[in-house]
Each structure stands twice: as C-alpha cells, then as structure tokens.
Amino acid sequence: MDASNPSKDFDGWNQQKKLLNTDVEPLFFREGEIWWAHLGVNVGYEIDGKSAGFARPVIVLRKYNKYSFLALPLTTSPRSNPWKLPLGLVAGKPAFAVLSQLRNIDSRRLYQKLAWLSPDILAAVRTETFRANSGMPTHKN
Image (cartoon, rainbow, N blue to C red):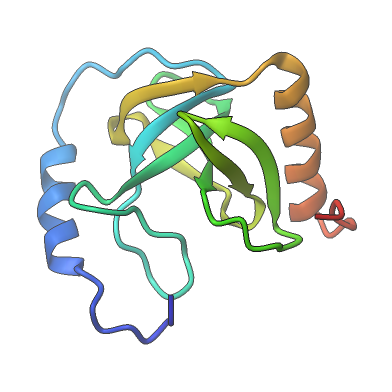
C-alpha cells in the first residue's frame, strides 16, 4: 500500500482501539502459537490489519509476560521478497512471516488462536528473524 494512501481508516481504528484498551483478564497464550490479532491501521509502510477488525495473524515469537509479547505478522501474499519466510499452510491458506515487521504488542490485541508451530519450525523462524533484523544476510526466497 502506498504510504500516502488517504483511504486508510484511522478514525475507525481509533474507535476499535478504544474498545481494546479495557481492563480485561489477558488470554492465555504461548510462544510458537499463531493468533488473530487486531494490529490496526498504521503509518506508511507498517503492516496493517485487514477488514472490519483491523486484524491479521501473528506468531507469538517471544512472550515477555501475560500482557506483552514480540509478534511477527503473517501475510498470504506469495510475492517473492527476502523479508518473507514461507511457513506452509495456516488455517488452510499459504502463509509467510513478514520478517521486517517484527513488533511488541499487548495481549489485549489477541482474539482467536489459529495454530501452533512445531519447536523445529519455531526455531527456524527465530533464526531467520534474528538474521533479518540484525543486518546479517537473509534466506533465499
């Protein structure tokens, strides 16, 4: 999406975000799980959530506590890119981890668990994520 796209629904996302920012008991989640998360509408080329819930799947890469974790957003776009890591099927659709969009998010954004990664796959995703975000050469896609 173009960074200057005026059609982003910041006002709609702001209303959704106000609803999410309530005192609720956090959902139980674990590292390696894939969840739907309300990522919202973001600035420029930061990855947005989709549809009415402003959501997309994320991998729980690192759990800091029951309130906060390091999330790696997913996409279904198969377009070749050194910042995308193919994961196979997630909820019946081809999924790719977007290594350049790593971010810390609050667990209140989570709302539906989709799947979990095996320990081997999670280790490979962590290795590639570190490599991509530390200036080391990335995998060949």
